[in-house]
Length: 282
Image (cartoon, rainbow, N blue to C red; front, side, top):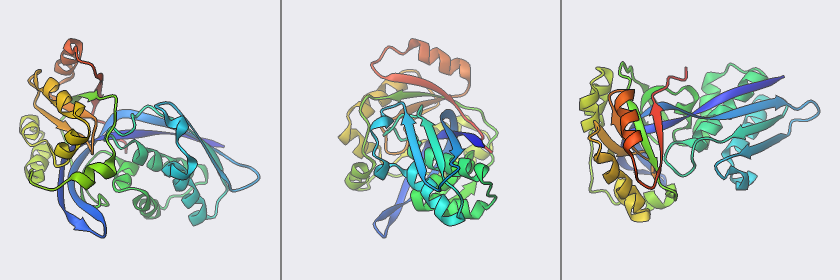
């Protein structure tokens, strides 16, 4: 028996830091799943409960199993539910160190794949495992649109009637999440309340005015290409421009696919660009 799961990326529409607790930063962030995904294949092992994970693409081949949260996710699943092991293959398409949640997506995808293999319908248990492995990983289990608080583990699902499109620019060098948070020293504020209200009424223009990321300044310090990408995207007069996660990915939001495709066709800068659309996983 085997299972195939698509693990989708996310964009942070807002990212506000509300404080620090126990060595972690607390967040207030609006997140949205987009149609960029890693493909995960899992097959039962017949003789033992061991986990074997193989990764391809985006430089993931060099990732040590000890540093790979996808391995940890499968091992935690086996330990919790006393099931057999699995041979897991992950085909990476989500860029790493780009703020798109690729690692969290893979953890959530592996948990979903294991739950299909064995099968397990314990949604609260899967959420607990996901939270242990990443700040926004619980959201990645279901995806869609949500407001995340605390370490990203408190999830408020939001209704969303709009269909924005995004032009993502990807600098060649990523941004270390740990270093970005280390350099954060406050001084910038945004409004997730206004953005959430705009989301729920489908007002993309108001949403665009409230896109915000508190980590933009330290990310620019670590990787000046972040600032360059932001400036390049603003030339297309989008509804808004923002960095996702801790960078280095930067996106412009457009009200429809035609405007987004037009901007992509006219972009002549040095960065790779992707057209992304919102995606509802559930």
